[in-house]
Length: 244
Image 1 (cartoon, rainbow, N blue to C red):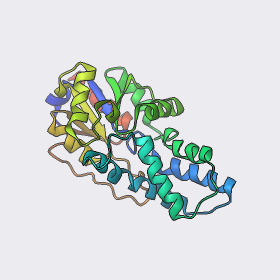
Image 2 (cartoon, rainbow, N blue to C red):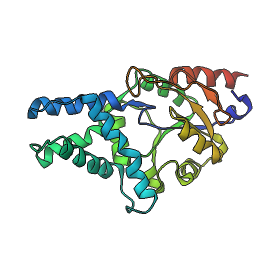
Image 3 (cartoon, rainbow, N blue to C red):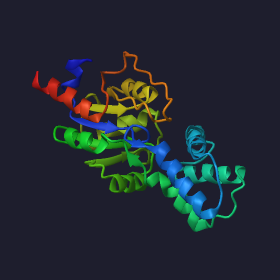
Image 4 (cartoon, helix red, strand yellow):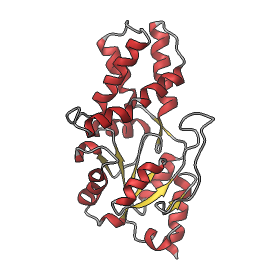
C-alpha cells in the first residue's frame, strides 16, 4: 500500500465485467432460460465461458485494424452468432437472438458492489471505465442499481483497454490530473496498463469470476497501490488513509 499516492485520489474508475458484476453466472442463467423456452440443453456455464473467450480476440481485431471501430454489443453479437452455429441452435428468431445478446446489459452486481460503490461515492467521483459501450453500461447500471456519477467507456475514447488512450481519457473527461484518478479492477493486466499512464491502481480480486475453482492471484505487484477484499473493504481502507 502506498499511502502518499492514495491520499491524492479524487476519482475512481472501475472495470465492470468481472470486477463490478458477475458476468458468468448471469450469462449462464440467461442462456439457460432461453434453452428451456426453445428446447435445447447445454452446459450453461461453458457456453458463458465460450462467449466471454471471444471477447479479447474480437477487440484485438479492432485494435489491429482488421475491423473498423465496432462497439461491444456488435462484437458480442458476432461471437454469439458463431456459437449458435457451433452448437446447432437454429430456432431463435432475430428478436430472440437480439434479446439474448442483450443479456450483457443485465448482469448481476457482486454482493458488495452497490453498497461498496455507494460508500466510495461519498468521498470520490465514481465511474465505470469499461470496454462495454455506453448504452450497455447505462442499462446495466439501471438493472443492477449501480450508483455511478458518470459512465466512461472505451466507446467514448474509441480505444479499447489496454490502449493508453482509454485510461488517459479519464483525466480529460473528469477534469483531473491522471495521478488523481484510481483504476479499480479484478484483473492485473488492466491495472498494469493503467499504471503505465500514471493512474493510481486498486486491485479487488473476485474469487468466483470464473466459477468456484478459480485460482486467484493475491501477490503484491509494484504497479498495484492498494489491494482490497471487496468494495466495502476498499472504502474502509481508503477512509483510513484520508484520516491519517
